[in-house]
Image (cartoon, rainbow over all chains, first blue to last red):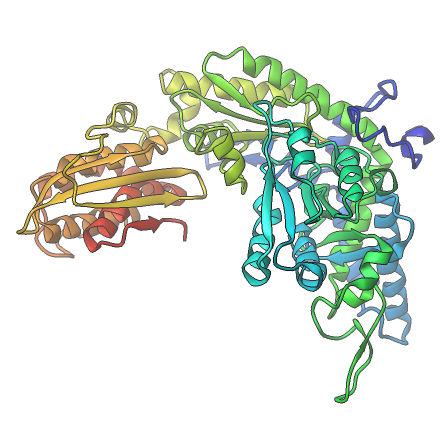
Length: 436
Length: 161
């Protein structure tokens, strides 16, 4: 890859289309596929019958793992493992260095000013719950307003509802239009002197909508409100620069980024993190403990009680290296070619309705097929080896907005091919035929 | 229906199921219903409401449902309304237990739960294909769980375990 692909600060302006402005580089997807052992397996194998090649189009739920991630985790356990932050011995120091280097990688990945901005969590859900339990519990009061959007995953709804029942603030919801585009005018109208927090997704896991996060943040800050962005679906598809977007919190999860499960991150603005009380209590987060009183460490360690997910952290570091090596601009270009192909062909099938047609969207394609429930569609597609997600996608309010009980969703990753986009379309045609 | 790639699913999606899935019977809201309960399968997005008219003797005079789910849950709800009309609550419960066995056990004994209407059970046998697909058992039993809840007066049931 040319250096330009890896250069930091190359992020396109987040208010405009996030589509990369670089000319297309040859992206050798067949070579990329060789890095993912699982893509070689067949599904629905049986004695006497060859299985079907796996067409994995459920990347928005979780990504598959490249050899580099698998090897890094194995190497950690075989060669470089001990507990971190507390050992005087050789292996503990080695492991601590490797683990803390991952914090630095995450900081670079988001272009955060410092590794101290990065709190390591179990996933994006925990990162949001952490903000709710610490910043939210300390600063939200009755009469305050928290703004969410109809595009949210349950992970960015329920933590605020749980806190709401305790603190008595009001939750307001930004609507979206028929394409799934966030209604920025309505958002601007919801903002006011009572707004304390805006917690909005950077990219919808159902419609794929990329939200205008820089504008969202700018408007919120004008009213003195803080902004939390859920980047779980976006960091995998496009470059993200928290110094350009300027949120107070940005969260993402590792397993969708081709890393292991059980690891995610919270970026927090330094001044805000310093105002926040601890999250969980335990080892590693304290400065000194006595029964007369305990003092806590500075962020980010204040929010990381107990032995952290060391092996998972090493895996995430390898995943970030892998994605950066391919280049997120190149990945975005490739995935968009798949999205465009599948969208164009699906649209031509009579009875297909695509859920989410915002001009700026990630490679996520949700749809319904007239007369066929998504659950049946998903099961039959699976028989052809095509793995998609069906159901409510942990985003019930959004499905209700589109007037559907459930939807099918194909989501493309960096290793998917045009042939796989076609396989999806072929499966939908075959399923439609089956139920005719 | 010449797609042989779906051969493994022929037992599951039998013609009767496809028919009831497409054209569910008793898909309505009876004005004189005195019991109802919602069945919800949040994982896959099936959501139905079962309505009952129970008389003073505990006999199901009318049964119907609204809402749509997948072909399996819709067909099961439709077949259920056909086989339990005119039955007592007790008979309906026994039938449900036998049907549940049919969906989950390879060697179900129809006498296990008391005297059952064998003809009714035979009509439900078409759904026994779900045995091979554990995730679909919830679909096949959703309407029946809602029926139980309606008879018990519980009002709402979820089949997500």
